[in-house]
Length: 268
Ligand SMILES: NC(=O)c1ccc[n+]([C@@H]2O[C@H](COP(=O)([O-])OP(=O)(O)OC[C@H]3O[C@@H](n4cnc5c(N)ncnc54)[C@H](OP(=O)(O)O)[C@@H]3O)[C@@H](O)[C@H]2O)c1
Image (cartoon, rainbow, N blue to C red; front, side, top):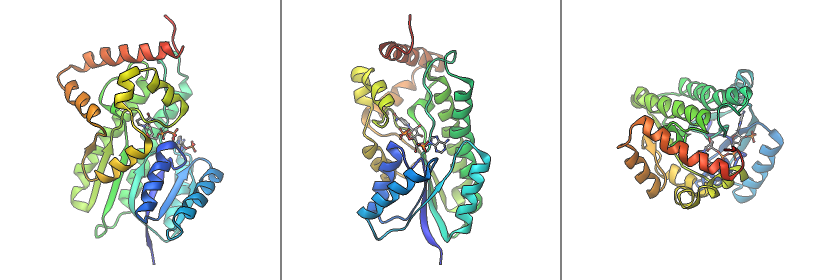
């Protein structure tokens, strides 16, 4: 008989791991995916040591590749898995002014964050049976709401994600499918992100959270269309409604230029 599973992308990253720890506390079975099978298998062992009563399976997938995604879809189709939840967490973060990022980096952000996320979501929605509940939680970013000079590609890719998921939510609401998107600000995951947060002083500190906290909030608030973790971020989002889109680009541009100068990413 098919067992229920949560399909989690980006399972080897900072936030992905935090989601997995939180999910096994709730006795959820997991299908973990990321690009490296060895790292996934190591993590699986760790998870099963914490909770031996669940089932964890791993499938490597490069979300930027159509062929690789097809292999993941075949793996899920051929197994005894019923997807009760999809967590679109895999993400490719690019930072830097458009003039200095490589064309490949731009393509990768679009492929992973936009194409890969939309493709896996469509596949899961298409294979869903109406009598079962399906929850889809996608990690976008607060960056999805503003044009972000010096992080233009990443912010634009997350704007795609937020728009896509919010629209999809309306389309599938009568099919027993709930679509939520979480839009965190800074998360203390990679060293690069920790440095970026630190370079923003008090603003960075007030807007940023640990991956554990983000995972807890996102899973708890699942069901809401857009989940904004943290009071400071909710306030920032509210205040930004009073500024024009071009004004927001000016404000965020100033903040990121200062942050990247501190990290020697740009010179005057
Ligand atoms: N950190 C922040 O400040 C922040 C803020 C807001 C939103 N977010 C979003 O939060 C999510 C998790 O980010 P994180 O901070 O935890 O980053 P992370 O530690 O770098 O983890 C990223 C995850 O995405 C996976 N991934 C990247 N490229 C992939 C590809 N081509 N195919 C399959 N998987 C791929 C990585 O797997 P591999 O290691 O196998 O490549 C990794 O598991 C992302 O969507 C990110 O955009 C992060």
